[in-house]
Length: 427
Ligand code: PLP
Image (tube, rainbow, N blue to C red; front, top):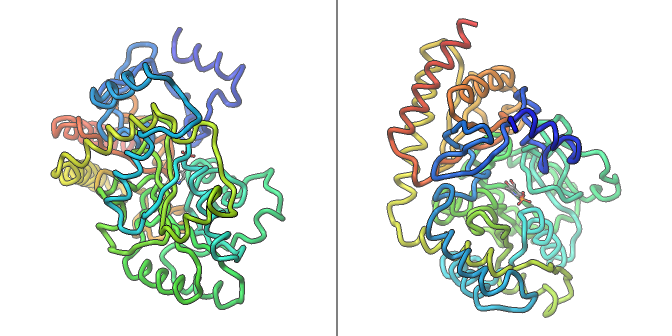
């Protein structure tokens, strides 16, 4: 089957042909290719075309596709049973690997997706603080649970329905929206008398494109949460073990009360987690009154993939430096190519995460991000794809470097960007 035929068939059975909207290429036009397999830094489609993959499953695959250590861990563990629904030591092992490195994560609970992690973290935070109000930030995406789908980034922004239909107003009445990197907007909510029990933020936002929070802003946020006794939740589903070994902490030195993880901690399998101070986490059932559960939570195969992934990260002290240099080399190359062709481009990296916006002004929040020229992004995306480079099919996403990418591959992508911008300019 060709890509076109395979996607047409998918569309007859699956809404939009995809199981997560952004995969459908809606904002960049054209149709997605159908993946046959992944290998190292590359994806190969059903027609045999190869793409240098800067998405890496939207972050989890920090060691690329089919990493041997993760693959072996998965295969060996699968032979002992795919799921137990009972405690197993692999869960404790992964929990230890994370808790021992994060001072503010004394206890952790595993779930199967980032959506569950943030949803559950908020429930615990509310149970602990005994206050229902929740502050979230415009352009931040925390998965697709009802209360969080208000001015959300990622696919929600891509498809222009940042606040989803089907979410009852009653459910979001306790969700207060603040502006990213704007402390006054947060302070105003606290001062309004709203009973805020939790504040959730991507300390390195990756779902409106890549927009890190400024240090002063996070410091102020920490102080406000302390003053008003609200639980500060850092959603590091994307940035955890991606921006650095300690996620955002290495950039801003701010500790949240709770942290959510996903993506890299599952090494490509379905694992995510939420954790925090023991005093907060002990509110969870069976010890406490906050209910939360999952049939496949702490799944042994997913735990094994996570253990292999995190252990490999801990063994390689230079990993994030190397990935960070490659990320910089890539976007600086893009910037130089854009400059040569008179195209405005803003670039940003945080460790192995990279982002770029087609706008002349610095991007510090969601409104700034929305000013990016999305038509230009679409043209660039298509021109790069035609040259074998797979970038996120939306302006409002982040790109990822994996450890098996070489400088030559980055140079190749930059060469292709030079060709792409020239082609776009010549119209
Ligand atoms: N939080 C953040 C910061 C994310 O980037 C994502 C997904 O991209 C999620 C939560 C939701 O995770 P999942 O897609 O595993 O439900």
